[in-house]
Amino acid sequence: MISDRKKLILETLIKEYLKTATPVSSGILVDKYKLDISPATVRNEMMELEEEAFIYQPHTSAGRIPTEAAYNLILNGLNKDKKKKELKDTELKLLDQLFKNDESSYKQTAKAIAELSGAAVFWAFHKNDLYYTGLANLFAQPEFKEVNMVCDVSNIIDRMEEIIDEIFEDLELGGQTLIGSKNPFGNFLSTVLVKYKNNNQTGIFGILGPMRMNYSRNLSLVEFIKQKFE
Image 1 (spheres, rainbow, N blue to C red):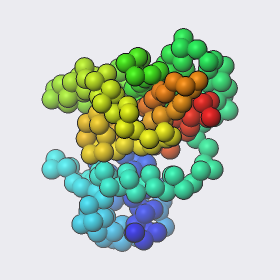
Image 2: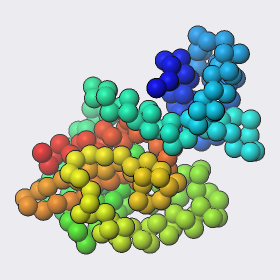
Image 3: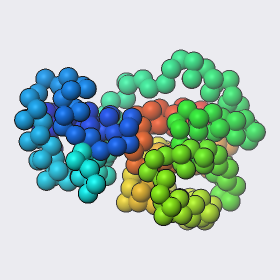
Image 4: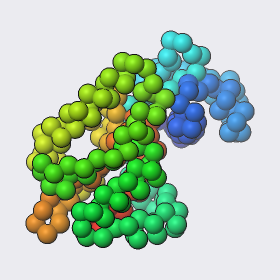
């Protein structure tokens, strides 16, 4: 558990990092977000957050970025706040229009969700029947611009079918979020997914992106799919 003030600072830091993909300084938090906290207090709280392993400082920057523990902490709050609406009515209407109970419309829905999430989407209609889209979204992420990261992401894509086959039976039914070290696709990625049953067929739908993803929005997108099979 952390204090409400630290949680506010951490949530604000993550919000800024989601937008910019660059390390966040205490000055940016105070100036841009008009926090009702003194700059000195923000600096001190960020030092403690770093000691508690919720943020860390890349060696090339004075700012800080969130750790896997930070995303998990925020995710726990999102899971408790079921009422938060992250999708516009127009977005939901579009998905409703696309979604029909056949594989062709599933693929169109997946393409739309890839666009709405800015991430990659995979859909295992059942074991050994995999569709994925939005891979360009992954390579467009600032985290994956470096050559070694491009290779890492490419390797994951090459192994996607194999990985899904490995986890297919072990995943529990329902929605789940696999961040970093808990993510079978790689500890530098996160996945928001749902496993469902449909006419005696079991499928898995998932959104795959960097740990720096909009979990709240992606949970809402996956919830849309989950509700369609309930």
